[in-house]
Image (cartoon, rainbow, N blue to C red; front, side, top):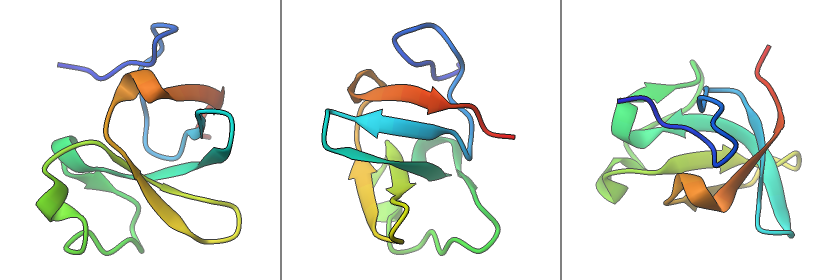
Length: 77
């Protein structure tokens, strides 16, 4: 089953998303799908079992557990 944003668009690796009104970044790991960026090390995040790892423009990483929390800001190239 495809994961989608609340707007109905499919979630893709590399999409730029906003989470709430304070965090935004690029999706680098789709945990439940086992899809990650080439340089991203997944083993540190696998224990979460699902959700998305997002990299901020400053290089920080955070976990977003639910699609409903993310808003698509820019589509992956």
